[in-house]
Length: 174
Image (cartoon, rainbow, N blue to C red; front, top):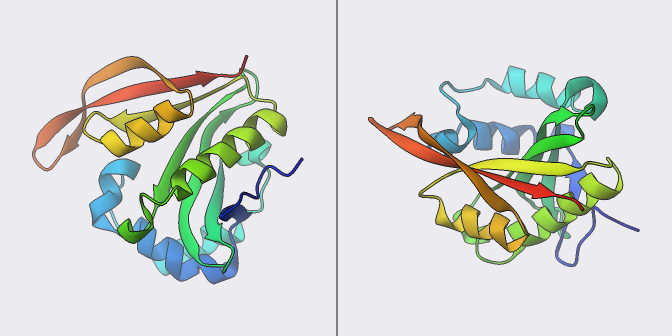
């Protein structure tokens, strides 16, 4: 069974050639709210991160994959974070870089591939994600894949001078 290759996209490991793409994503202030970033990242730090991306998920507790078209265009990234082997769970996040790539099914396909990978290869029992209550597209994306809203974190993130609520979603593999 191939879990990382879909019909229109595939998920792949970070490559040295991804330096400029990852640097642009990590330093895009319009998405800092999603990643809880406060300061820019240097090319040097991103280069070091990519050089160490080969480390095992069991060691570093995270895995970042590039969402790539079959024309080898990096469309976004999908992450597994807070990997908890003992409790068989992890958090996940999806980001498509350019708004022109949104609404074409790439996020849905990437999420389906990642779910398959997490359950088939990592043997996870559950996945979770946190989504700002005003991010309707992400809420719809995760709910479409079976994630259930299990909690509300009130005034969780301070963004542009105001506090925002954040939902916690969970998917349990039965």
